[in-house]
Length: 129
Image (tube, rainbow, N blue to C red):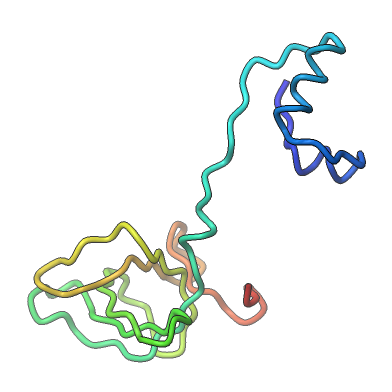
């Protein structure tokens, strides 16, 4: 059986840990085959706003975007989407990216609704966290 620990806590006033709950379920005769934590992607993703967008000097299909990701200093992001505009809100990955062609950049993806996998966040689609 698969279950979501947070969903169970919304139905039951559980004060213990997820491991303690698994032990209790086992004692009650339910088999707990595995315990896995979801990846912590939310800590590395933020909503940023595109401040500027210019053609990449070394690649025709890329652009250089300056993005306000809320940390005080705009990030320079190399982007492959052709439909980003200044003022768009986009998802920004803040770690794990490597410089390309000598430009310090972070990952960002964005597109209109018709292109799955790339997200430009419109008004009402996000909130500050």
